[in-house]
Length: 264
Image (cartoon, rainbow, N blue to C red; front, side, top):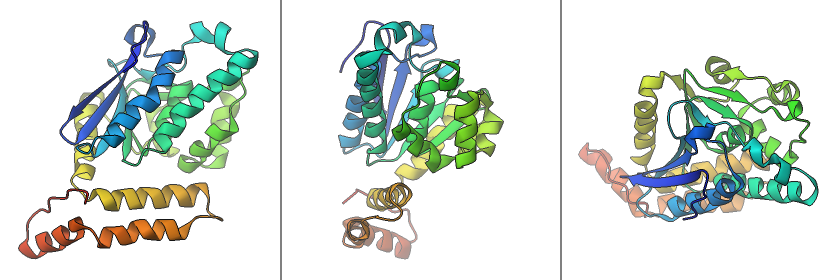
């Protein structure tokens, strides 16, 4: 996979879990252009790995999930055609996460700012330590915020909170983020990885086809409530009933044991 000179993404698997780490610790895990460009590759590799059930993204070290885009690159990437091209690279990264078929969790340690906050929002769930903080400071930099990126924000927060976040550029602490729906759970920094792993393993133990069907339905109903393709979603639900896993679930229930699902 692509390894930029300054900063990189690292991927590893541990059982049914794939871990993607934003690794640019000297710069608070700020994203370079090359790091943004590598996001789709890493998520696609995890999504296509038959042994992976859940994908977790986090930041290296304890100070930051990511401080957002590397500001040192702004001079080259934030004017004219270059700005539009940079936006497209950002958008491809977000779309790759949103279109990942498997459950995704952002494990947020420390700062989660700007484009990295959007990246976390594109994940299905977010678990934050009590030291986590969130901000989208585009208004403080006179940056226009792409309307395509506001859509995922509206899936986790009210419109009023999204406006507040974008209008003020304010930094929200973990407790505030939890109250506004940005976080699913807030835990101590010491237990962040253990709690995130516990949640991921709880999900991974369940039937993959059921989870994929549920994820597809929720995402479609949120994104296109008035024009959702119910026939396509119904097909995913029916596939669950026709699966070997459905038979295994029923048999395990009768035998009073834990089912072993294979995603088939």
